[in-house]
Length: 189
Image (cartoon, rainbow, N blue to C red; front, side, top):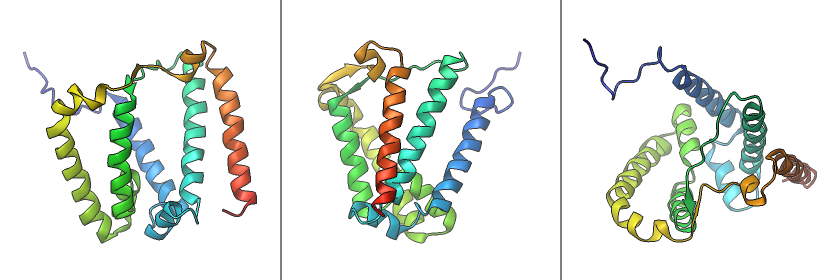
């Protein structure tokens, strides 16, 4: 009897991986076409002079939120949110923010910039991701006993918090995002 190696990826048995790859490539293409892989655009976002990245991310959140909850309402997907805490958000935000501020890329835009052939992303960005991931993995056992547990709120979502149907959160949040996108466009930002 032949057994499969658990470390091997079997696309034939798991089409979800192919869908993830396809949507990842599409998202990277759209990031590049939207200009979010350009250093000047990202620095403009950090300096609050160019809101291209914010508009792209808000559009992605809006599309994803509506799509996920639509598929959930049809029974196509089941949501299993991971538990979180204030400590996890603080540490994650610091790691993300420091990397973003130092290099001018986030993980998604690093991949897109590498695809564009930008050497700073390929050398500094990829090295930063690998070093940062290794440091976090090495420190994780200690962090998980301390700060990552602070302010634990479990797998709470806004619909669960308010004890309402998810669409009673999705619809107003959609409206708020659309208003913000409209305001950003009208303001020329």
